[in-house]
Amino acid sequence: MSEKGCVIIPTYNERENVEEIIRAVLGQDERLHVLIADDSSPDGTGELADKMAENNPRVEVLHRDKKEGLGQAYIAGFKHALKSDFDYIFEMDADFSHDPKYLPYFLEAIKDNDLVLGSRYISGVNVINWPMSRLLLSYYANVYTRIVTGLPLRDATGGFKCFRREVLEAINLDEVRSNGYSFQIEMSFRAHKKGFKIKEIPIIFTDRVQGKSKMSKKIVREAIWMVWRLRLWSLFGKIK
Image (cartoon, rainbow, N blue to C red):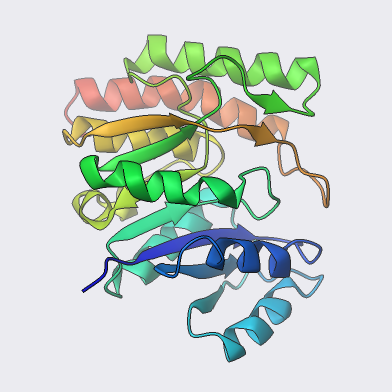
C-alpha cells in the first residue's frame, strides 16, 4: 500500500490564500492530503476550506474554538492526523512563504530520515522580501539556538517540516510548552533528544504577499527564553 502524508496548515484569516494553497499542495503528489487547522477565522477561512473538503476526500478541516497560537494549532493537528493511517505528517504555512513545489523533495528525503526540515540557511541565506532587520533577527536567532541548546541545525526556527509518524508518537505532545516560533525549536529538540535522524534540505523562503504576518514581540521573547528552558529541562532529565 502506498505511503500517505498529511500536510497540516494552520490558518487564521487566510481567506486570500487558503483555496490556492490547498490546490497547490494536492497537485504535488497524489499521496498528499491536507488538514486545515483553523482558529475560528472571522474572515471565513474555515468555511472556504469546508467547501473544498465537501468535494475532495483528500481535504479535511479541523475547526478550533479560538485563536490559541501556532503551537497549539499544530498540536491539535498532530493529534488529529495520528488518528488516521498517515505515514508522514507535515507542517506548512498557508501564505506561500513555504512553496509547495518542495513537497516532493521532502517525500524523497524522509525515506532515509525521521524528520526533514526545510532550511533557509543550509546553503547560504535563501530569504526573499524580508527587511534586513527581520533577516538578521532570524539568522542570529538560529545561531543563538545552536549555541544554547546544542541542536545541530542551521534553521531550527523554520516551520516547513515533515515528520515520520513514529516521531510524533514518541513525543508526549501534552508536554510541549512552546507556542510561537519557539515551538519549532522545541519539537526538533525533543526529536533530537529521542535519537531520531534529522535532515535539513534547502528551500527558498519568500515572505507573504497576501495577509498579515503573525510575528510579534511576544513571540520573540518566548523564543529567547525557551531555548534556555529546553537546555535546563534536558540537563535535569525532563526531556528525554
